[in-house]
Structures are given as structure tokens and as C-alpha cells.
Image (cartoon, rainbow, N blue to C red; front, side, top):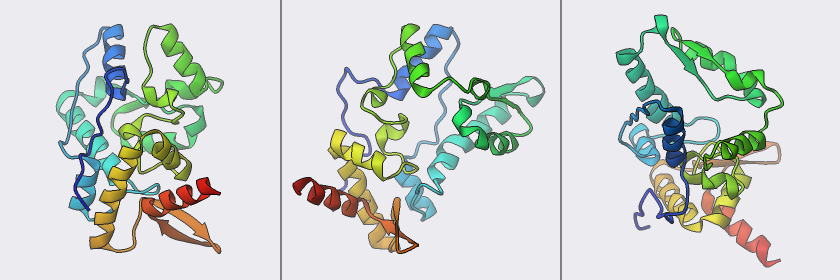
Amino acid sequence: MPELSEVSPTHSSRKSLYDFLTESAAQLDVPLVRIADGRTPFEVYWDSRFLGNSRIAPCSKILKQQPARRWLQANADPANTTLYVGVDASEVRRVRGIRAGWSPWTVEFPLVDEPDLTKEAMLAEARALGLTPPTAYVEGFAHANCGGRCVRAGQRHWLRLLERHPDRFLDYERREWRFRAEHGDVAILKERRGGKTYPLPLSVLRQRHVRDQRH
């Protein structure tokens, strides 16, 4: 299959997560430090010979956590630095692991202390402050990671991506096809059949969706 661009074209009126970060930092009047590994998620999958999925996502570790830790080690003394993580009350189960993973820095989770603060309430508060949330939320996505192509997401998320941005879905479908051709029966998604778990390629998910739409 032909190679496609990792990043799909976007209309100028669309707001990305990066736009939101830039606007937020400007409103807080604090510098926004950008750090990057330089690779795309699928380049990480090829380099690690492992396709990211809902259970294990090497892209998150290699492209986010490791560069952030390197920057912290070079620029932030644990003795006088506090890290704030945006995990909310619905993800309180993650707090212990995150805190342990970022030791020796002190880690705080201010959103965990507000159990009634829903995602909708957070977005409404952002708008009230004059910020424009990423367009992904307007489109019904639960988060704005990777332009909707988050390998940690489930089937419902990927079907929404197929409906909203079929070019992005087909891009990853082709990339997954190439990876499977070299590394065997692996897939971003999984499904349960007869009490067992099987890989569910994006091409199969799309074909089923098209078939169901015809009936």
C-alpha cells in the first residue's frame, strides 16, 4: 500500500491541542517549553518492532515520558519542583503509579480533589475564560490526543474517527497493514470472541462498519 503522510491536513479554523496549550500559556503569562523526540508514533512502532495498542503504548513512554524526564533532570531540581498532572477524579487509580514513576519529584493532582468537576464542566470553564478547546471535543471525542489516532482508544473512538476524519483512519489502516505484513497478526485494536481475545485490524473494523451501514 502507498505511504501516506502521518499528519492529515486541517482547516485553519480547527483548533488543535497545541493551539490550546499556546493560548493557555499566554493567558497564564508563563513560558511554554516544547520538547520532542522527533519521531512519529508509527516510527516508534517500527523502531521498537511493537505495535502500540490499548494495553501497551510505547509511543507514550518514548515520545512523552522519556523526553520530559530528560528535560526535568537537566532543568528542574526535585528539591524545589512540583509536577502537576491533569488526572481527574475518574482516573484516581492512576495516581499511585504516576507518583511512583516520577519520583524523586513531588507530584500533585489538583483535579482529583474535585470529584464533581466533569470533562464538560472543565471545557465550559475554559470557554468562560476565553479559551477555545480543541475541535476534537466539539466532534465528540473523549480526548484530543494524536489528532484522534490514539492507539489507547477503543473501537467506538476509532469508528468516530472513521466518520469524522476518514483520511486519518485510512492513513493508520494502511500503516497498520504494512506493520502486520512484516510482523504478523497484531493490531491496534482487540476484540473478544468465545471468551478469547483476538487482534482486530482497522481494515476489518471499517469493513464491518460499512456492511452494517448498508443493512
